[in-house]
Length: 132
Image 1 (cartoon, helix red, strand yellow):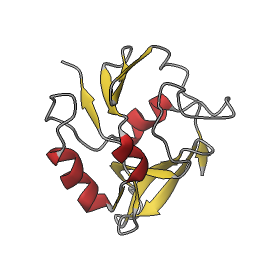
Image 2 (cartoon, rainbow, N blue to C red):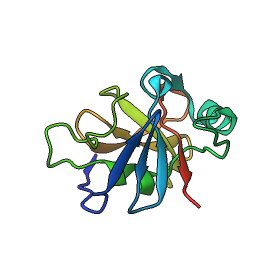
Image 3 (cartoon, rainbow, N blue to C red):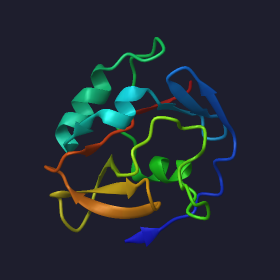
Image 4 (spheres, rainbow, N blue to C red):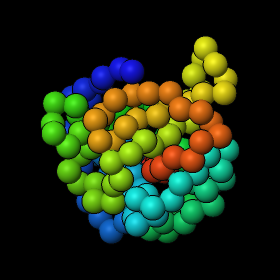
Protein backbone atom coordinates (compact mmCIF):
# COMPACT_ATOMS: atom_id res chain seq x y z
CA UNK A 1 0.00 0.00 0.00
CA UNK A 2 1.13 3.52 -0.73
CA UNK A 3 0.49 6.76 1.06
CA UNK A 4 0.09 9.85 -1.08
CA UNK A 5 -0.40 13.36 0.12
CA UNK A 6 -2.03 15.60 -2.42
CA UNK A 7 -0.88 19.14 -1.82
CA UNK A 8 -2.16 20.51 -5.11
CA UNK A 9 -5.93 20.42 -4.71
CA UNK A 10 -6.54 23.44 -2.53
CA UNK A 11 -9.45 25.13 -4.28
CA UNK A 12 -12.84 23.47 -3.94
CA UNK A 13 -16.35 24.75 -4.42
CA UNK A 14 -19.33 22.83 -3.08
CA UNK A 15 -22.53 22.97 -5.08
CA UNK A 16 -25.65 20.85 -4.99
CA UNK A 17 -24.63 17.21 -5.60
CA UNK A 18 -21.09 18.09 -6.77
CA UNK A 19 -17.70 19.35 -5.62
CA UNK A 20 -15.64 21.37 -8.06
CA UNK A 21 -11.85 21.22 -7.95
CA UNK A 22 -11.14 24.59 -9.55
CA UNK A 23 -7.38 24.08 -9.65
CA UNK A 24 -7.51 20.83 -11.63
CA UNK A 25 -10.72 21.68 -13.50
CA UNK A 26 -12.57 18.59 -12.30
CA UNK A 27 -16.16 18.21 -11.16
CA UNK A 28 -16.82 15.39 -8.70
CA UNK A 29 -20.04 13.56 -7.92
CA UNK A 30 -21.12 14.22 -4.33
CA UNK A 31 -24.71 13.07 -4.12
CA UNK A 32 -26.22 10.36 -1.94
CA UNK A 33 -25.31 7.68 -4.51
CA UNK A 34 -21.59 8.44 -4.07
CA UNK A 35 -22.00 7.24 -0.50
CA UNK A 36 -24.32 4.31 -1.12
CA UNK A 37 -23.63 2.64 -4.48
CA UNK A 38 -21.30 -0.32 -4.79
CA UNK A 39 -20.01 -1.30 -8.21
CA UNK A 40 -17.49 -3.65 -9.81
CA UNK A 41 -14.82 -2.30 -12.14
CA UNK A 42 -17.03 -2.99 -15.19
CA UNK A 43 -20.33 -1.82 -13.71
CA UNK A 44 -18.71 1.40 -12.43
CA UNK A 45 -17.94 2.43 -15.99
CA UNK A 46 -21.54 1.82 -17.08
CA UNK A 47 -22.89 3.59 -14.00
CA UNK A 48 -20.81 6.74 -14.54
CA UNK A 49 -21.59 6.87 -18.25
CA UNK A 50 -25.34 6.75 -17.50
CA UNK A 51 -25.73 9.29 -14.72
CA UNK A 52 -27.02 12.77 -15.29
CA UNK A 53 -25.98 15.09 -12.50
CA UNK A 54 -26.53 18.84 -12.38
CA UNK A 55 -27.43 18.67 -16.08
CA UNK A 56 -24.15 17.04 -17.15
CA UNK A 57 -24.02 13.70 -18.97
CA UNK A 58 -20.27 13.25 -19.52
CA UNK A 59 -19.35 11.55 -16.23
CA UNK A 60 -16.73 8.80 -16.02
CA UNK A 61 -14.73 6.72 -13.55
CA UNK A 62 -11.70 8.69 -12.31
CA UNK A 63 -8.08 7.69 -12.80
CA UNK A 64 -5.90 7.00 -9.79
CA UNK A 65 -4.07 10.25 -10.54
CA UNK A 66 -7.31 12.20 -10.33
CA UNK A 67 -8.53 10.40 -7.21
CA UNK A 68 -5.42 11.16 -5.19
CA UNK A 69 -5.92 14.87 -5.84
CA UNK A 70 -8.83 14.89 -3.39
CA UNK A 71 -6.87 13.04 -0.67
CA UNK A 72 -4.56 14.51 1.95
CA UNK A 73 -3.19 11.92 4.37
CA UNK A 74 -1.88 14.65 6.67
CA UNK A 75 -5.46 15.22 7.87
CA UNK A 76 -7.33 12.92 10.22
CA UNK A 77 -10.08 12.81 7.62
CA UNK A 78 -8.12 12.37 4.38
CA UNK A 79 -10.82 13.39 1.87
CA UNK A 80 -11.37 17.09 1.28
CA UNK A 81 -13.92 18.50 3.72
CA UNK A 82 -16.18 19.78 0.93
CA UNK A 83 -17.23 16.20 0.16
CA UNK A 84 -20.29 15.42 2.25
CA UNK A 85 -21.40 12.04 0.87
CA UNK A 86 -18.51 9.76 1.77
CA UNK A 87 -18.13 6.22 3.00
CA UNK A 88 -14.92 5.58 4.88
CA UNK A 89 -14.28 2.63 2.56
CA UNK A 90 -12.49 1.89 -0.72
CA UNK A 91 -13.40 3.83 -3.86
CA UNK A 92 -12.26 2.32 -7.15
CA UNK A 93 -10.66 3.97 -10.16
CA UNK A 94 -10.43 3.06 -13.84
CA UNK A 95 -6.67 2.50 -13.53
CA UNK A 96 -5.72 -1.15 -13.99
CA UNK A 97 -2.80 -2.46 -11.96
CA UNK A 98 -0.09 -3.08 -14.57
CA UNK A 99 1.32 -6.19 -12.91
CA UNK A 100 -2.06 -7.95 -12.71
CA UNK A 101 -4.90 -7.05 -15.07
CA UNK A 102 -7.44 -8.57 -12.66
CA UNK A 103 -6.74 -5.73 -10.21
CA UNK A 104 -7.49 -2.03 -10.25
CA UNK A 105 -6.21 0.83 -8.11
CA UNK A 106 -8.43 2.13 -5.36
CA UNK A 107 -8.24 4.65 -2.53
CA UNK A 108 -9.30 3.94 1.04
CA UNK A 109 -11.23 7.04 2.11
CA UNK A 110 -10.73 6.27 5.80
CA UNK A 111 -6.92 6.32 5.66
CA UNK A 112 -5.95 7.83 2.30
CA UNK A 113 -4.05 4.67 1.38
CA UNK A 114 -3.77 3.66 -2.24
CA UNK A 115 -4.34 -0.05 -2.71
CA UNK A 116 -5.18 -2.65 -5.31
CA UNK A 117 -8.58 -4.32 -5.39
CA UNK A 118 -10.01 -7.16 -7.41
CA UNK A 119 -12.00 -5.84 -10.39
CA UNK A 120 -14.85 -8.23 -9.55
CA UNK A 121 -15.24 -6.96 -5.97
CA UNK A 122 -17.98 -4.47 -5.13
CA UNK A 123 -16.57 -1.10 -4.06
CA UNK A 124 -17.74 2.47 -3.86
CA UNK A 125 -17.60 4.73 -6.88
CA UNK A 126 -17.33 8.52 -7.20
CA UNK A 127 -17.69 9.74 -10.78
CA UNK A 128 -15.82 12.70 -12.21
CA UNK A 129 -15.97 14.92 -15.26
CA UNK A 130 -13.62 17.50 -16.73
CA UNK A 131 -14.68 21.13 -16.69
CA UNK A 132 -14.44 22.49 -20.19
